[in-house]
Length: 254
Image (cartoon, rainbow, N blue to C red; front, side):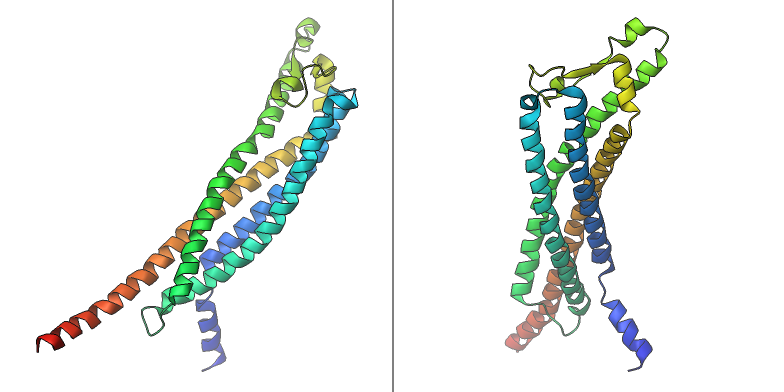
């Protein structure tokens, strides 16, 4: 066998669909974890600087942010392991699918592991759907804040109306109702929207939301691909047994 044929044989065994799904999953989780972690840090800084003067007013929020950052560390570690398993399982099922119509037959243990992996991936996709929805909440908050700032820019000629436009962090559950000031109004709010910290935090949350969506897409695509491969392997085994059963019946009738 020549070098060219050997290369073609090696490339034919690469699970390109699983490789794309793995890259999507890894990219999405990296975007979600990296941007989400930094966005939480910047959010705590914004709340501390503009919405709360007393440490006791935002100490609970600070603990929650710290807790979510630890969760992000765990998610990053878990998905690195998951992406490795995903790619390895893709190599196995692709080889089994392409060779099951020949002499190669996948073992019962291999099929059970692949089926279990599909169930785990499906459950993970359902859980990640909730994470995707939850990651939209800070984007919604900053979107409303940006819309309010835009309205203030439009109404610059009427100061009385501007001072009535506010963003209250207490309404979103970020601060307790006795927090002082708890809200920012008018020109002060407009100035906040122009700061680098606000713009960077908003963009980080949008990027984290996009990363969660990419990860969800990768999980759903993985479930679809693995289900199709397992179906092909199972069907190939059934088709392989049908001629044997027919031959045995013919022999028995004789």
